Image (cartoon, rainbow, N blue to C red):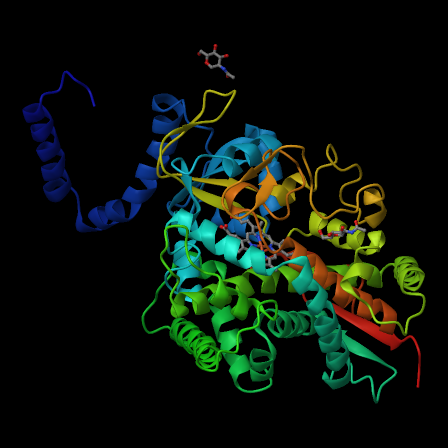
Length: 532
Ligand code: HEM
Ligand SMILES: *[C@@H]1O[C@H](CO)[C@@H](O)[C@H](O)[C@H]1NC(C)=O
Ligand SMILES: *[C@@H]1O[C@H](CO)[C@@H](O)[C@H](O)[C@H]1NC(C)=O
């Protein structure tokens, strides 16, 4: 470091220190020293290196345990952690997370900086692939170059069209009604009231409705068999711990995950082969047909059938936890608000004429309060509390003197901005009516940009971004609104509900799974609107 020390000098200094350590201190002291070295190194690095030598770096949260850093505080309560650190350091700061340096960029400026960074500056695939590739499979999403992902998103988005939503709504409705009959938590043919655990019901309803609509009848029917367990095996491989340890030999749930991925992909593949062999492809029927008829990349390369199968897994996984958690939160908030259940019911009657009328996609478009209920729930309970990218070259944060070095990760949290009073007055209150003049699901700005999968808004400095923004923006938003809108409509039309006895209010969020879920218990006591 010091230019006046010659290599010889420093070698002899080092050998003097080494001989002191080897010969002059006791074995016990040596062991203690070996154990303490990482701690001492870490404190010196934090106190001297970051404060004085690299003063161009964003402020760094001090941590006592090397490598682990602030993992516990962040992992248990990310929003509290961000709030506390923002007060101390401002909206841009770095913390250590299990060996990774994470630079948090809070607020709209952070959203803009990270979501609109250039492809050469930050990488989503480097941040996520350890987690997603074993679950989705090879060649898709974050296991391919970004231009491939952009094309894959275009193929899927083209299939998620208004025309397909028109066929999906009746299918989703049918699934919900069937579930109300057959699930032991409802069993509506034999019961007038009962208790339902929303963590179970909403996750089942989500996979049933998504499979029926996106994957077709055959794959939906597979869920009535042992095949369903494979999804739960795959699910268990999709947790934050898999971020840290993508592969652990000998640990059963990793093996189960890998086996589930293979078996599910092979089952989709079999259906693809069968449809090809019998030339049974009906564009507009489901996502499988859509991908079979349109999945040639811009450069003429075709997706293999195996990649199509893996993309189907990725798309289903992308929508499963996010939608299931959102519908559970909606039902929990409504449990506390019989007045809003009534308002939603009135909206149904106003649009449909009567509760016996069929609900269609077009009807859903005329129900602003239903949309606002979804929109408000995504504000207060944004499923993904953190969005990450790996930094690929040194970056300057605009209007500061901070450099974020290559090799760091950047992190944004739209969910945090969505809970600030400065953007949403009385932000912690769940109030669908705050959106009375704005029931469209998307934020909108005049200017649009197309990264290859259709136009998205160019500016991403909105505080409200539950679906992200920029080239990695969600393509499932409209499907999610269609699925959630139909599920909630059927709930409101069929049932009234309140919290079950053991509950005292809307549960606190649990941040330790992939999406922010309600903490257990999350149960309702329901009653049929029209009793037998
Ligand atoms: C309430 C429901 C949902 C929420 C809140 C949500 C949220 C998000 C967010 C925040 C991102 C951006 C991630 C990032 O920038 O790192 C994203 C991307 C994505 N989502 Fe969703 N999502 C939802 C439903 C769905 C559904 C239903 C699907 C599929 C039908 C889906 C498929 C995808 C895909 C393919 C991406 C692109 C990933 C990328 O380009 O890197 N999502 N979603
Ligand atoms: C509700 O959101 C959907 C999905 O984005 C949108 O197409 C629809 O126009 C919205 N409906 C109303 C009444 O604003
Ligand atoms: C950046 O550093 C320069 C020179 O040290 C200083 O004048 C300026 O105020 C700093 N800017 C910010 C935003 O801190």
